[in-house]
Length: 173
Image 1 (cartoon, one colour):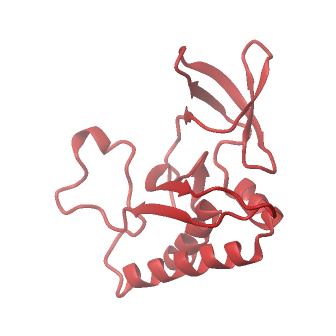
Image 2: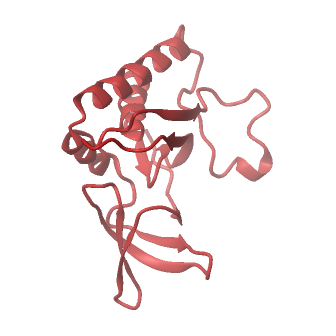
């Protein structure tokens, strides 16, 4: 839900279409511009989450000295140049989007948008597992935002948490 709200907000503020790398990293032009951490507090009998603590970090601008060498190939910035009041507009759009999805609690609305924004569906990825990494093709994201993959062996799996790695080509815009 939060990843979709961030994508919506970034698109409104930047005019460019961001994508989601499962679970909740946001990319623009093949580079990570946002990471999201979420800690939820239980679930009520009607499926609602009574509270959630969100950490949303957005690289709005490229650092003056550039990104550190080890991040230059993967890190990006949402905006290419200073834009008046962009930080406040982005924060407001993110908060409004999160609250809109939360109040509606229509999972189908944000799950469909999540799939539309996914940059991994149909792609080859590496699933990072404690027992070793495995190559897989991403089949889809299910209605609970689990990642459905098919390993090279043909075995299918449903991932509810974890990390994947994907090679992205930077797109010209």
